[in-house]
Image (cartoon, rainbow, N blue to C red; front, side, top):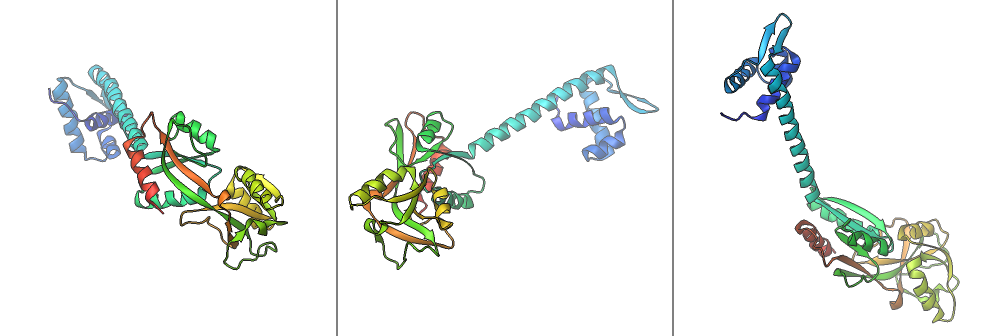
Length: 292
């Protein structure tokens, strides 16, 4: 017995449901003679008559009803298989990345945008949490790659380290910082209203104490973005980080370097040691770390 393509069974189903050869041919976008020939081929293959003709059109015979039910199942199986294979293919081109709220995520999103420009078929699913939360997601295999601001336990592999330099961000009309292109020292922050992230606060206080004063911190939170927004509204000067060759995407802002090694930070790209990322995810990690 010669196997039939599922398209022939789909066309047979169309004839059974339309009841007229002409309507079915229009529905499946083939000519009526070609459709009639397909039905004849099915009848020859199964050695059975599939339709009765009456004044209202074509009606399935008992054999036709049996084949109709089986053809529906066959086509449904093919549709489900196509869908599942398609989903599996999409998952292979998707990378799940966790970015700690303590890092300058705009810097990494800039890198992802560059990577996506040359790999448009890649879908990035980005999760944001504090570093401990990102490491938990990585441990549970929810994400493939973690970008954190703290050294992970030994069960994780450090793939890349990026150093962050302290940066002061203020509005253009800010009265507290005079920008002349030179870096400021910690002593220059005495009396300046500041905002920063909670992860940076302790180091800022320690650095200021070493200079004989306490910082005037008005606002702290876990996100660099919120800190910068607070500064751009003219409420304070934000102590943030500059990473690599790309600064935060700031418009109408004054950015001043701060010379303070103790406030420099590290951002680490990590994966799990005991469960290797997929070859595709590993390839993305390598490319991501190469982008300046």
